[in-house]
Length: 355
Image (tube, rainbow, N blue to C red):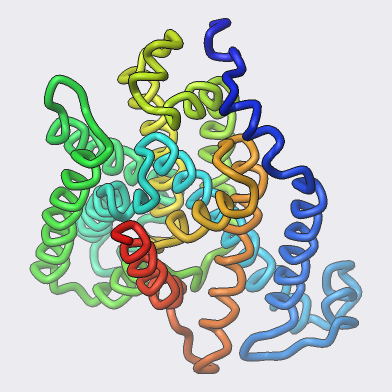
């Protein structure tokens, strides 16, 4: 629609907000590549740059080649993609709700995706027996992102319905999301406690948000969802930018506010819930990254979606590296690291919002 491309004065100012966007994006890309290299070099077994180079070219010794190709490289690529997913979801949610505290975790999307995945684990054990909820769900690596997306969509629909009162407002959506997330997290905990399976520990690690054991199959399971969600973004960005100007302004420019808000929420759910299906509910990434991207380049969502995914990939890869190195040979789940970073950031945002 022509109205969606109409440049208001505010949007014109946004386009001038970050003249050095390209240089900043290149710097972030270089940092992402450096973090990727560090993840390949460091771990329970430290490799030299030469060993990594030879392994990548298929010329190294068998042990180094196995570590790189079967353990570290797929793991770091999954982490990179997951960071992109949570970053985009966070930016979309904060833009749609005009609320800097909006996040897939706060709005119940992660909780809905997690409950669906926990139920899938339980059903897998019922079908395949104690041989392993996760081994039975090798079938699920194709299905788990779908099931998590379904859970995330149902949770988002519940939040939307609870927040509806002749329309929805950002504040009502956030409050409804917190309530729904609390209920769904309690249900997931109850199901897990009542399960009493030998595989409970595996699922607990997954619920903490972890890249442990993630391989090529996880990457290929997540990639189609990345492509699907990314294909929907270009047609929605203009509407998302107008929503940031307020419902009244967006409506006066011809935007069907509720329809566009619902569509953007759906895309955010696809990004967040599919990532949860593969690595578990890693919290606060979207919250942190969306804020940093906004501070870097202003409120224009197009610019945020250039920088945000790079910030997200960098945060996830560095958090995973930190979790692997702090207690070698044991690992700290990445969700624990991001929560330790995210909670103080969340408190800071609350304090700034009150000020």
